[in-house]
Image 1 (tube, rainbow, N blue to C red):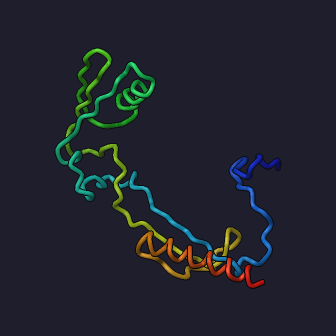
Image 2: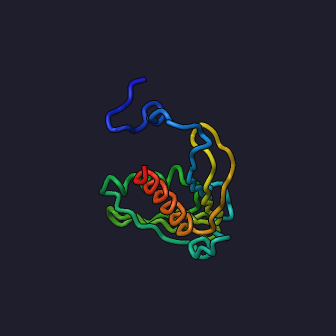
Image 3: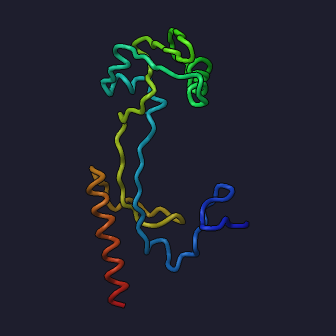
Length: 152
């Protein structure tokens, strides 16, 4: 398979150099945050004011972005709204108790350090509760690698 210039992805597979060591010699730092899009009550769980009271979205249909937004709202959003046009501006008024357009984080974010690499998952070494702890762990790991390389 031909690889694109500068690395990257072609046909869904990332370019990877052949590993120098077995999978067990590596650690993988993984961050996941499951999307809330399938959770109907995400707005309610997040205490969303738009969900509670409804909201208005104003779009300028004279622009490409605005006309695309209006088309999405009208034909694909699946939300209940009233529409009022004044020239090129359209005001969409959404009724309460429906999913807004914001991405609420009602599911936990997961910060993990795992044994192994892309070839083999050998289990969790540790889970971090915050992004700051995960980043600090990653930085310390990178420093240990740099120190070993410098020592020879």
